[in-house]
Image (cartoon, rainbow, N blue to C red; front, side):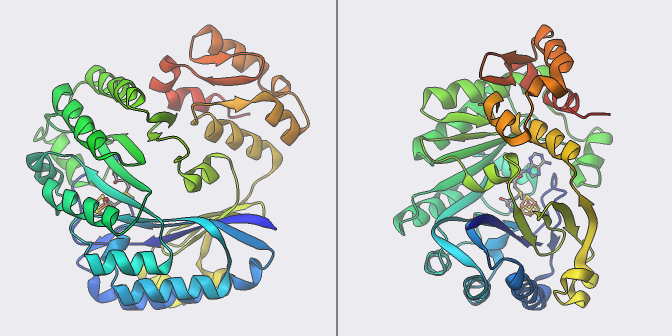
Length: 379
Ligand SMILES: C[S@@+](CC[C@H](N)C(=O)[O-])C[C@H]1O[C@@H](n2cnc3c(N)ncnc32)[C@H](O)[C@@H]1O
Ligand code: SF4
């Protein structure tokens, strides 16, 4: 049976964080019921397309999926189980915000099949959490983390951010060491991006927040690499670190260009050779009532050239890099047939490392990864 992964988008948050431009709404809890009903129609409507597929991972992301009631969580999982062949060892992740979890809710998630929780903490410092506009404290996080563990989840990710307003290297090191002491299986560390349209964007342009210099931000990144590696967290993707065997299967599906279906508002899919996105307008999405033909937009057939480009710039995000033999087996030609000159140029610039088996980003290449990855676009 072919393998497929599912992404389910829950676009609701208790309040909007000052840095975030993800597709999510605050103060719309009145609309959750209607949204879940539409989502379930969409889940049902995919049923006939996935008969010959087995689901190997599900990621419920947001927004704040942990805002859902136990009843809504159950309904979504019943629909998933009724319509898809879910492998009994599938990785099933939910993103959760500290302050939205209770023992009852964690138990409902476990009963529904969730076996991985991704907790968005961002910072261990309560003042910083306030600056970011988070709804929780460090203590709320700790309490939820311990509850999740006690109820038996043995696969937890913690999201952290660095390069934050007035953050020093010392602050960031303290955050890392505090988290390491809890021994989560996985840690994601993102450098803050000031996204257009966010409150931080306005504050930054009005001089109301001061960020660490680019040099310090890069130092923070490499300190992260050193500290986490020294504590048995393998740096396996630009922003991701995991204990042995605990790399996120679902994210690797994206980076390895495997098939996935995105369900819900604005969700992206890569399925049967096409990339497409669901519409992002909430009312339009509800009005389409899960009709697959009506909700899809930006439908793009991925021809071989695009496929190879994506294979390169997604695969190079992984620190193990691109395996040349795997490339040959997949595309029927040596990697040099397409990229010889680019590889030589980037190796000369010390942005890429090459040996007989692989090519991968160097440390210098990671620091300018957007530039390096863009070089793999063919004309
Ligand atoms: C889908 S988002 C949010 C998940 C969850 N709602 C939460 O806030 O914990 C996943 C992660 O992206 C990161 N993130 C969001 N906006 C960012 C930004 N502007 N710059 C860097 N990282 C960002 C945060 O670490 C966040 O936890
Ligand atoms: S960071 Fe998470 S909780 Fe904050 S607004 Fe974005 S999706 Fe919502």
